[in-house]
Image (cartoon, rainbow, N blue to C red; front, side):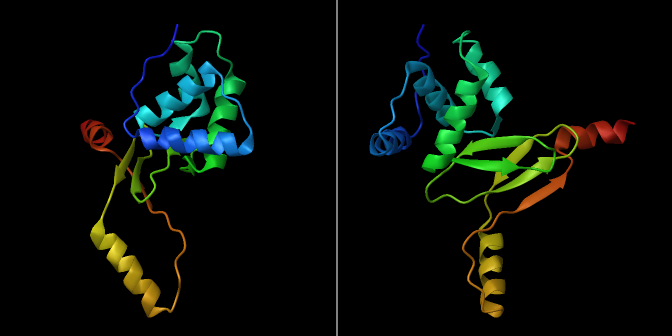
Amino acid sequence: MKMKVKVKNKSRLDDFNKYKSHKGLKTSQKRLSIIEYFLKEDRHFSVEELYYEVKKVYPKVSYSTVYRTLKLLADSGLARICSFGDGTTRFEPAHKAEHHDHLVCQRCGTIIEFKSTEIELLQKKIAQKHNFLVVLHKLELYGLCANCKKKARRH
């Protein structure tokens, strides 16, 4: 049974196909379905989370196939590896020119992506003030999401 998935940004899949051709790699239908699902869902996945979701469609898919596919996506630049201090490695689709930061709930693990022009401008200003060239940055704010904050107030 084929997994029918529409990828939001088909050019990302095209980018992967160019990468695999350049590296002389072949892609099975299972691997392609994993990639399509990952790109379509556009969220943070641990290997386990993606494995269990893909396994619903491909019961015979192996954990190692999902792991190797995510590693391949990271190597190709189509996925970023994220670690939010909870010991779980997550992968998120890399967006070419879109930078975003994260709010991470320490209780339930919810990850909220956000963009802030003000933060980006402030970072540039601080770097200029210190004659510093920023080549990469990430901002992660840790706390409680709205649901966990509500639950904490009840107790």
